[in-house]
Length: 235
RNA sequence: UAGAGCCUCAA
Image (cartoon, rainbow, N blue to C red):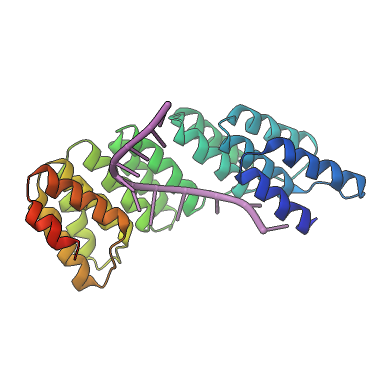
């Protein structure tokens, strides 16, 4: 089963659901039954292709076949609902999950917080974050990044900076994504200088820039006609 | 063996 599941995942990642089904057929011919990982992989594949409802249907099928659902299966559905802006449905699914006595973990909260932030509902995101902490799950850079992105996208760059500084003061380790989000936030507000400031701060923090960092910075520098600085950055 | 985050561009 393990081998089949691995191959299945390959097709699912490529969105080749017809091929994926052939793998399942072959499993059955070999007398192997699909397990909960087979199901989750298929659900993920359908969601990946944009067919979340088929994913939800397969989750029901798992239930009716007596499979014990787990947190990962729910996370796949939750994250894809959130990606499509269906956060309310995701929250309902969270209730269902808890009614099955499954404890949401960091990744579950992370996708939901991200979903709210993408909708600009920062207050709800922060509320969820508090709820998470009350269950002794501490936010990591995925969660902080989501909140910062939400603030930046609303143009609340000062709030974002305050949030970031609080994290720094509490010596929470920041990763490259968090820096990229802030740098891009400044660039979008037309404040390249602050963006460059953070870029330098990254260096002292020992965080290496990526192509995303440079895309944002170059975009900002070119937009504000600082071509010399842009060239300088490229060397 | 299955689950989460950043920019640009394309549609």
